Length: 130
Image 1 (cartoon, rainbow, N blue to C red):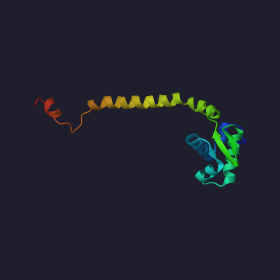
Image 2 (image 1 turned 90 degrees about the vertical axis):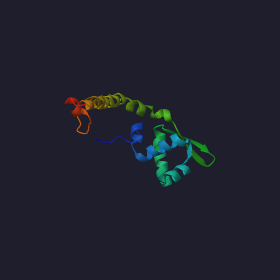
Image 3 (image 1 turned 90 degrees about the horizontal axis):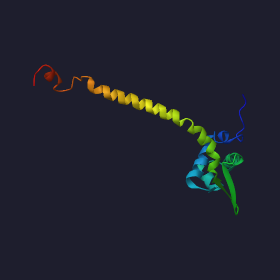
Image 4 (image 1 turned 60 degrees about the horizontal axis):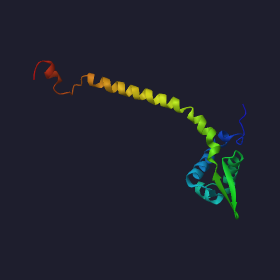
């Protein structure tokens, strides 16, 4: 099955780790010039521009020209399909955590019923010694 183009949708666009890094940077720091992104990521300018182009095509980032600089801004609303998709798994994760918690609580309830050799006084009390 052929792979979908990176500009097909937001999922394909953010599948690449460097593009996710760009999205995270813009989310944390706000609008950034291409030069700042190049410096921060440590990537060549053409590579950063290519990644920004993919993100721009799917609407995840918007570009604003400020003089000679191109400043990129995150359009977070375009990530909503990713959020909605991940949210479908929250219930599953919650159920898994509930099961783990139940098992841990069950084991904790069973613990006091087991006799430990290091428990002082149990044997003496059970034998009628006080």
